[in-house]
Length: 125
Image (cartoon, rainbow, N blue to C red):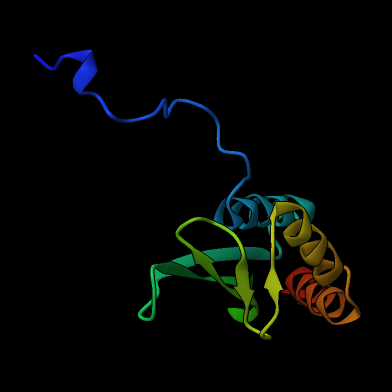
């Protein structure tokens, strides 16, 4: 039996201070499917980075009816969550900045145009 004096670990039971970018993107993917009656879906894929201790995460819009796909976002999430690196070379320091970045990206003219195009094609199929 291990004596409590031998346990050198701190209390690890608390909640994390920030939500991970991967979790945030998965939540947004689920919301998009609901908002569009699944005429547009988002797929979130994460793979270990070949360069460092991080995950490369892709957020891809999909139109299930015709198979169209559009990669909207690629990020690199470090093992300690933040700062994350965006594919366009920017860094995001924390959860709040990341959510604001996503909000701006999702409401951008280009993103809205692509989603509306996928919806229209899905309704015509």
